[in-house]
Length: 431
Image (cartoon, rainbow, N blue to C red; front, top):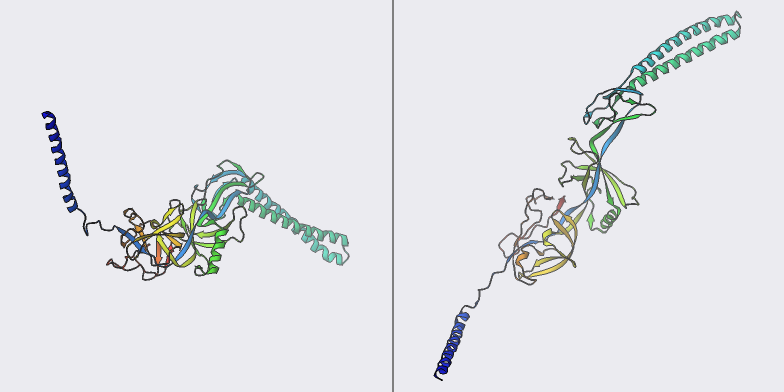
């Protein structure tokens, strides 16, 4: 019994100690609770204020380069090629000798034709002298009229023989000239298709080489007829404004790596019919190539300016969130609360999207700091967002007075002690 009592008293003492410990810990916990001003400050987010702008709309289209002129050098005289007089891949001038064909047979033909002409002229001289001698004799009835007629006919025959011999000489000279094959145009010559000792021109004009004029070049590209029709409808409705002159006079060529070619091209032709197999319209531009950097056959991207959008609303690409239900942007209201707004985007202008539906202008759109936000309705601290300047990023050609501004104009909201909203002045995007 005594042992049982001792154990019971020890258990009661331990229970009392535990209760006292729990009761004494409530007071410090209450004293350490968060009071007024003890919470975390709202996170900072970068915003831009959307303002209307005038931008130039451009379209990137696939294109291929073609030589300005192409000439196939062919052998027009039959014979053995004796010499090749050019370096493959070099620049040649119009009239420059490229090949020398064995000219001995043609030179002999020319000499033979010259001899025939001399004989014909001698016969003509004799026939003319006899006809002149018979003329007074026939009037005096000293010779018969038939003899006089024969003399005159012989003179005419001699004149025809002389004319024929002279034509033969001219033909022989032409054929002799064909033995020296010259370039018909100025340009760059490619690989030689024959070597010395080859027999050419037997039965047909044998191809020898190809000369291409590559300065300037043609740029052939196509555009969907649906896009052109939509542009015309937007012109008619007033949504878009035509460029000066009503057409896109210049183009910009982009190389395979996306680098812009440093010389603009000029649009010279637009197709008058639609290809029924592809629903495309063919366009052609002229592109200067004085350095020979571009070559025929290269595939490029053609950027062509076609219209202006007046009062367009643009937002940076990173501000647009996309999902299966559509595109949205996050806005900050005057109370610093976040809300999500659905939008519809149009054409890409540099690093920004044109917003066609969902914004009216003046909204504070969140561009940076999404990872700091929780849910719509959460408080945030908006600060102005500055676009990083990239040397390779497309730039926008500003109107006078806007030089030095970033592509996506950032503005601080009111009450932040910073600059006001971005200017709504017009800008023309040069992509």
